[in-house]
Amino acid sequence: MVTASSDAPARGVALLVEPSPSQAGILTGPALGFVADLVRAFGPQRQQLLEARLAQQACFDQGELPDFLPETAAIRAGDWKVAPLPADLLDRRVEITGPVDRKMIINAMNSGASCFMADFEDSNSPTWDNCVDGQVNLRDAVARTIRFEDPARGKVYALQPRTAVLLVRPRGLHLVEKHVLIDGEPAPACLFDLGLFLFHNARALVERGSGPYFYLPKLQHYREARWWDDVFFSAERALGLPAGTIKATVLIETLPAAFQMDEILYSLRAHVAGLNCGRWDYIFSTIKTMQAHPDHVLPDRSQVGMTQPFMAAYTSLVIRTCHYRGAHAMGGMAAQIPIKGDPVANEAALDKVRQDKQREVQAGHDGTWVAHPGLVPVARAIFDEHMPGPNQLYVAREDVHVTAADLLAVPTGTRSWRGVVWNARVGLQYLEAWLRGNGCVPLYDLMEDAATAEISRAQLWQQVRHGALLEDGSTVTAERVVALIREEASLLSARAEGEDRFADAADIFESLVTAPTCPDFLTIPAYDFLS
Image (cartoon, rainbow, N blue to C red; front, top):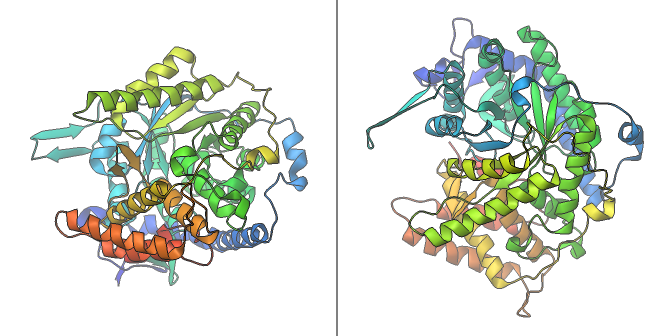
């Protein structure tokens, strides 16, 4: 065990790894002291919020259905707006997302996108080096000194004069940073990620005419949004920033949060910039929330798209709610990636992106997400054509009237053994790459992250739990799925180059899909396997 790097170590903070020289510049005594202050002030309530999630899920498991909260009806009916948006967040028509890898940060900020969300969460495997080197990379990006040299290609990467606006997504409330102990306990990962970034970059961003901007993942209740608001106010006071300097966009990616959009905006009204349709996690959350309800077994993953009524209702409600409150309504991720060497397949993939983005912009979204720099011009062309101004806050969507039944409508479609195999194959390959430190994985011409892997394993769990009937007349059983996982892991390992971690991935995946209740997040048990 080593103390924090500084002449004045942070009280009560211990690092369980020796930081590299570059990491030591991030893990200073004052920086870790700032994080520790946040943890001591807000850690206990974070734990209460996590316990409240479990209590709410227990109610759903006993037959209760998610619904709009009667105790907050006055907020939904009230005439209020969020605080004005900063100038550099008024136009967010195309946002690119990706992990905090050094080369990725440079390419994303140079991509021509309006904004770049640097991700410590779903597209990042949270190894120690990934998380702390990511902070080094972001500090250098904010200072505009970031460079990456690729000797193999003889190429040097650096920022262009004009770059995307930077946003950062910390890890969710449910995760910890096990390598840092504060008063003997692992640090909440969300406060570790947020605190280090704020401490090192907030003032520099403000001086440059921007600000510290964030995405908040996995919220399940407006009380969690209120907690984040308190964290922001506290951090602003500690750093000498005006109240409201920090801005956050909340991902509506859980089913319970879809019933509390107004309340979430209201709780964060001094700091919120908008809501985002985190659609892959939303599908996963739908499975997990309704896990005890046999009438909510989904069809094959490939059939659960944005045109399903429950998804259309959710995204439409995001637009109506945001625009009524003066906030941005951001669209979802295009998972497709350019396909090299096959012009026909590549054009088909790009056409799917165009259709998706045209649907979003015509529905009233103010911007959208892509995962690959090659898709930025494709998405931008669609939004430029249909959104001549910086945003569509003027699109009121007064035609939208979403009920609880609309949000809970079961998607239609078929279930096949091919879909079962696909879930096992994709989930195993993603998890194996994640265990090797890669959280953003191209598979079968799609960019997979933890959210899409969560769909795969949760859907398998759901089918096993309820003995799902497939179109060929057979039933999904634990025995069939376990045998499939072992067979696929063996085949994938045999094809792998060099050492692989498919044995570990299979063990984790099997435990997830055969658990008596649907595990909250695959990243919690898998984190024990990371260094």
